[in-house]
Amino acid sequence: MIHWGSLLIVQLVSFGATITVVGLVSVAVVGLSARVPASTSGQHVTTFAPRSGTAVGAICLVAAALVVLFGLWEIVAR
Image (cartoon, rainbow, N blue to C red; front, side, top):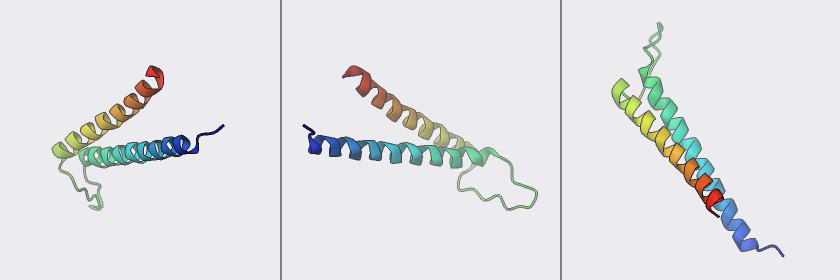
């Protein structure tokens, strides 16, 4: 017998974790792209300074890695 309530909870948590990881990685890419020098056309617009972009990128990548590692720990521990 399928316990539909538990299945729905698992689906919602996995959806939330996926959105969180994708969001963190995309912010990390934007932050790390602040390190790239401006293009010759002058169209390079970034929201971060190079140092703060690197810091934001590193923090977001570490946070995304922690979310993934927590999920793996939950799978292995149970």
